[in-house]
Image 1 (cartoon, rainbow, N blue to C red):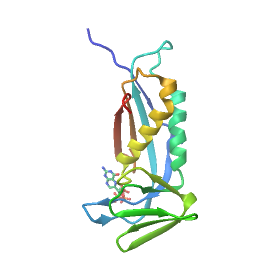
Image 2 (cartoon, rainbow, N blue to C red):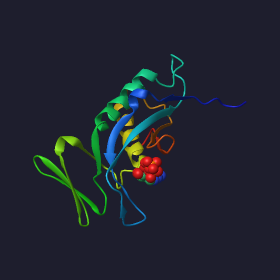
Image 3 (spheres, helix red, strand yellow):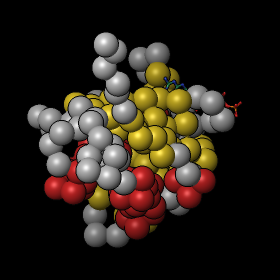
Image 4 (tube, rainbow, N blue to C red):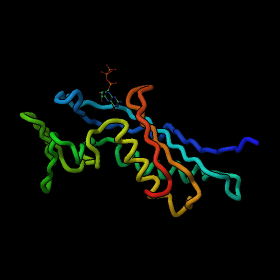
Length: 166
Ligand SMILES: Nc1nc2c(c(=O)[nH]1)N=C([C@H](O)[C@H](O)COP(=O)(O)OP(=O)(O)OP(=O)(O)O)CN2
């Protein structure tokens, strides 16, 4: 007999966040700063509970929304890039790449623990944070969480994490 599997997906218009970023690629090419209206989908898989839910849509939705709201209307900067160096003083955050420099008010910045602010890396951070925020509520029976981040109308970076061992 085939074993059924169950998954919950949430993707809401409210998850769209507008943020600026720049990445490096091909070794030493550093993009100009630019923005995206990022879209987000979050999924979790696991057995059905007593409600016949994998998890409550609403709880997952609210946990994702908390993360996307933090990113909305900010510049997203990488904490761990080898060449984009990000430093902050009391008021301003400076990003440097070779002979280029960008200076922002601290409140305008979100510095993420990523090497490059790609859709894949942003998806990973959201997935880790949603997993952490919901673990007590959702329990240990889930198998994985997946977050997908769309940079530009159909260009998705996707990260799937095991629910356990996170
Ligand atoms: N796998 C990935 N590939 C690319 C990523 C990424 O995060 N993951 N990111 C980029 C750049 O950020 C690039 O700026 C993508 O933006 P986009 O607006 O789609 O780039 P275009 O040059 O196509 O812009 P148009 O406005 O559509 O002309 C690249 N790859």
